Length: 196
Image 1 (tube, rainbow, N blue to C red):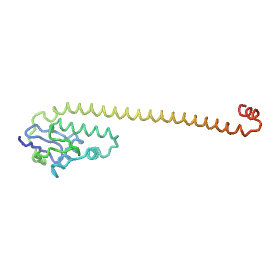
Image 2: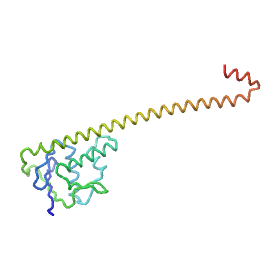
Image 3: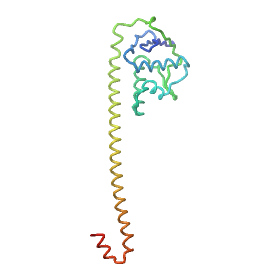
Image 4: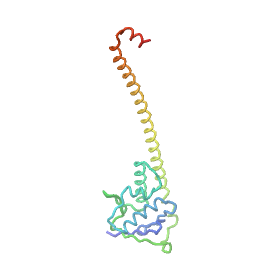
């Protein structure tokens, strides 16, 4: 089986697998960062992996995301890189993610740009961009629904707690009255005072 070759620009702005068309990432900062992380780790140690939490922290460093939302975004980003040409080359292990250890990776600078086939920068990415937008919208909708449900639960819990507190106060009041009644010498008079 022929060993695959991945050529990547040093700033992650494009990549190319074997002799396939170049994939442009100029306007896709998150994917550039993710690709650079995978390449850097591969060049350091081809068998090393990047954990999902490291992916999240590296690609979305300044965003405070709910765990499920962050995880979904990372999955979408990794899946998208696969769809754009790294299928079978971005691998998942029990420890995290990595490039295929047998992959040959070459990092080039701006002077060594391989030729780009006409139209290859835009056309292949449109379906993927639509899929990403749809997935991100679904994630945002899920996050909004989760927050709304959480608020509803808090309100319901608060309402239940207030009702329980009212019941406890009523019971306490009744207990106090029961305790006070036997101590009164004139019980009918004490009852009249409590009722009146």
